[in-house]
Length: 172
Image 1 (cartoon, rainbow, N blue to C red):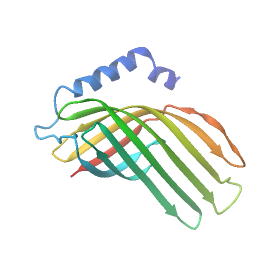
Image 2: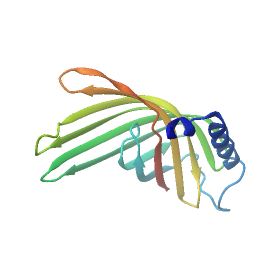
Image 3: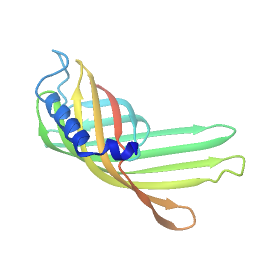
Image 4: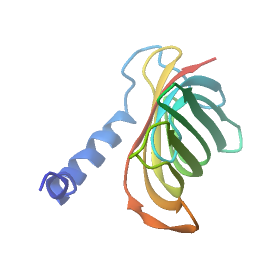
């Protein structure tokens, strides 16, 4: 019910309208120019990977992001990595509207059973927006369609998920 309400036409229209209003004015008078900077930060998402992230934008409208995380405890081991490429559709001084496409891999091993170890590969693409909110801080929000490929005994289809990605970035 909640998913049906979230993806209803009025809600989608309101989100698009709110996103388009962000392109007309900066939140801060000295907002970061997201044009051709490198950035470090944190990313969360199936396609982008979850963890520490490095993002680079170039003059030709292309960009890339690498994100990942590794955690090894006595109970479980988890690792993920994501690599995305971007193509800029439109850019203002403070906002970049782009198409991301990428691949990510997630692995979890449990020390104790009955939990099952699993590995998944996600491939997908969608649209995104990077926005400068202060002189060197930016936020990137993406809505990709993620296709899961489960890698247990043999690769098999796991589903399609429209799960957003979010990154908080420090541009330098």
